[in-house]
Length: 207
Ligand code: 5GP
Image (cartoon, rainbow, N blue to C red; front, top):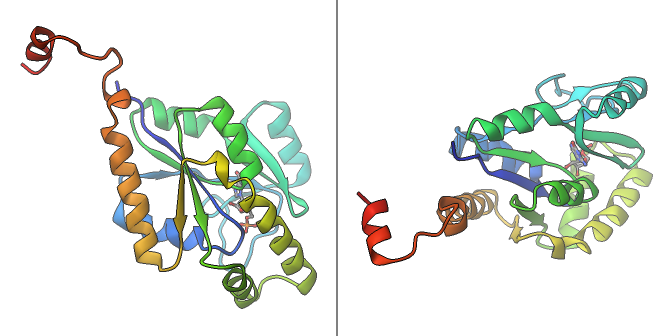
């Protein structure tokens, strides 16, 4: 069976990855979302098992020790990681899965899955990004500065991704991502494990 696509979506904190993912959920209901584990405290309205698996540091260390995470990274003082089993089973069943993760983790995934599709969501400007983080009202001033510094460092690693999508307007950004996924499914190297060569072989394979 053809394996599903592993799609990684990164981008600085506040760029709107969460909103993009929730719009994509409606537009592409066939796409599966990986739920990460984190040691960060839940924000208002976030639910365990839906937004994240909220875990203690000890529980997280235990997952690392059991090799239960495909990747993990420390980000602004907390651990975040992708449960391995779910990703592997989803891909094996032929379904596409999207991981919304930060850059260090994405680069680790790229080493393990070079055939993955790596998309970087960028803000229209750094000023706009700061306004979005501040407007969220969930972070202290120090944390906002920290997230802005991390954001610039993350954008410096954009070159390791296959696609850059500007989140200037949410629906437009989602349309670009949908187009990328469609195009990736049409790639010759994803559709023919052995390239069909010769006119007779082509006739045979198209019967
Ligand atoms: P937040 O605290 O704003 O929910 O997430 C902070 C950052 O952690 C975001 O950039 C988010 O994409 C990233 N993140 C979420 N889950 C994971 C994960 O499983 N692994 C890694 N490496 N980063 C993650």
